[in-house]
Image 1 (cartoon, rainbow, N blue to C red):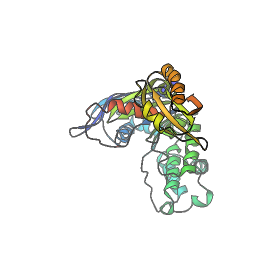
Image 2 (image 1 turned 90 degrees about the vertical axis):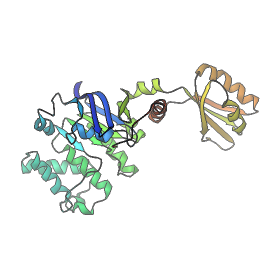
Image 3 (image 1 turned 120 degrees about the horizontal axis):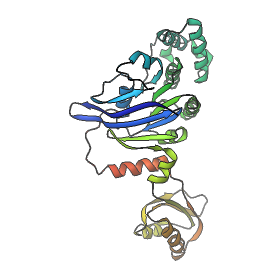
Image 4 (image 1 turned 120 degrees about the vertical axis):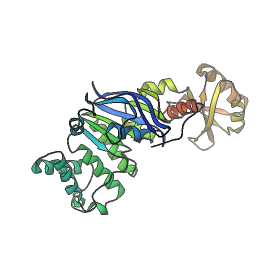
Length: 325
């Protein structure tokens, strides 16, 4: 796999506030890389530095084995970028806008038109809309057009800042499938605060919090390593008294209600410190409270579980004011 993106001690300050602090990343491709963080974590500030819209205060970065400082034009020709809030010339149609982007990249008009039609279709925009002014398009349609323009130059590295933020649930599924297919061809660097979307398409993730990198790891290994074992317990009867008793057990870290699968049952989701001890103690506790055990099974942690766990651990560290998204 080739090295598509690398940063070394990348830092950006706004006055006395460090929006991004000493960021070290190495992203290989092809594939889809997830860049995660809550709003205000520093994701957009980082991306603006990557694409040349902000100068780093200090540190270094390389894209596609080139320095944007010394080879800016070469890098930009090989790069595709979708900002968080894409803007368009409202008097242009979608087709005209993509032809304009093609002109900027030096594509012949015939090739640009063919490429524009291919991308409008691939991004799920219906033909009747192609020649309508963008000013009358919905937010979701504009988001799809933004993705299309990011692909116009056949980039080797595509940087997407919150690419599904303006889409409805069905639109999100379509665009995520597109992102996943692109990851089989090139490197996609995708930021989001929607954890389920990242989990769906990204094999590798980095998590940023208050400008600092918390973790950079394969999604699967991160989920195994960073989260306490979890058990989903379903019983016949009411878990109120059982939950109160389990909350004081030393092997229980956290518990919460679990939606019951059938009438007359209830459930608990328990994050435990010692899995073996929990597996022995839970059936006994269920019987002692006069309940019937329906099921007790380990739960696969989600990326959301990982994120909450890591942010909780980091929250004890004093942080600066949040800047950027």
